[in-house]
Amino acid sequence: MSSTATAGIPGRAIVIGGGLAAMLTARVLSEVMDVLVIERDILPAGPESRAGLPQASHTHMLWAGGADAIEQLLPGLAKEFEAADARRIPLTTGMVALSPQGWYRRWSESHYAITCSRDLLDWVIRQRVLREAGNRITVMERTSVVALTGTSTTVTGVSIFREDAGVEDTLFADLVVDASGRASRTPKWLADLGVQAAAVREVNSGLVYASRLYQAPAGLPEDWPIINVQADPRCDGPGQGGVLTLLEGGRWLVTLHGTRGGEPTKDADRFQRFASELRHPIIGELISKVPPLGPVSVTRMTANRRHFYEKASLPDNLLVIGDAIASYNPTYGHGMSVAAQGAVILRDTIQRYGWGSPGLTRRAQRAMAKPVSTAWTFATGTDVFYPGATDTGPTAGERLAAAFVDRLSYTATGSGPIARALTDVMTLRRGPARLARPSVLLRAMVGPVKPALGQPPLTARERTAVGL
Image 1 (cartoon, rainbow, N blue to C red):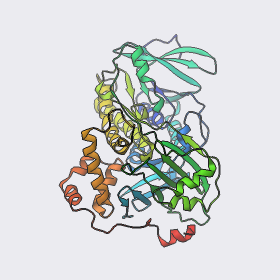
Image 2: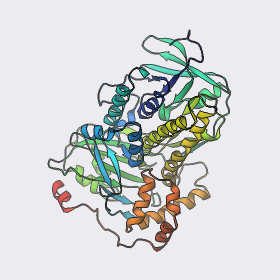
Image 3: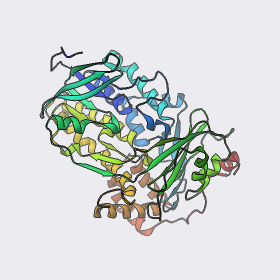
Image 4: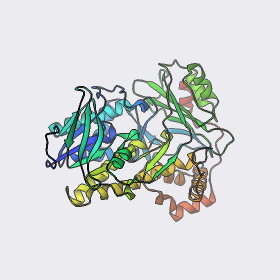
């Protein structure tokens, strides 16, 4: 595979990136062609961190919609997650969450989420994909893609730089997929080919993420819930919140976040104080009782940014997937699930129309916009109200959508059916149309049927286990 190769070699795809989106995409494409995965880092042999994924140190959740999608592509992976000590959290049973409208109740299970470290999650998926695909997937590490080759109408491959050899090269392929994530360079590469740029929307609340690991208390219940104190965009001052999750190895991962003027810092001495000063101090109270296991990690690249590739005239043989299409405020944890659903959409499109059919990549790109739009609505529906998030402020449509979601969230604090409907959409199992059903609208008009909770809905056993 070098510059001496000829264009149009049958059955070769190039996937840019080596993360979750890239591996799931490679698994799909390996059913119809050979796949070359190009990755800048050296992919670790175990559940370890890598330089190209600094956000891995923060909280990650794989919602039911994403986990279901991965299970379709890799049947039985749920058992592999369990064997690796990842946790399946029943929802909303296993979540203690303070919304801007009040504490949610812990209703009986209707959905679920998978929680573990991002390093573990990527490793479990990567080893399964590479083991199953055999020699149909080749990984080229320490290699950067520097350009697309071809014309404004057809992509023929990529130009690369091999860091190990210090040389440039050209690789040809029948399909190029950008799964490189938030740092995608596809807009520049398309401009270099003379392609008109896709429309872009950015909503940047100035959010900063800070995370730290703690040793969880001995004897903590196996079904320990996710603790989530959400920010309130309507209150005076910056929005601040935090999440506490139980990871593999009996560790708590605490992620705190704040918008402009209220950002957390790397200062370890201030971390617990920041948590205690949130809208409710429960996370600060919990971590005050246990020892930290390392320093504070901070990430500032959290802007919501969406490229409307589904509406653009992209060249043939090019597809963009995952965070390279749209990246979101990490608070909602939708990125991995949207990427997984995108891979399923690609598989279904290939199966329906056949590999090599005219317009295949355009069909797949348009179809991927559906889960992207759902996640985008959740991520920007709050962020757009923070000062400086956009140049123009929220649109009329965004204000209307936010008011509707506010009413649903308020009703969900005391209505099981509304809580399940919201969770349907939040976990990406259903689209926003689920919330427009007459039964949902009627219940939203009535409001909550149970009284508001004044305190976090922890059980007596949970409180005892942590000394509250």
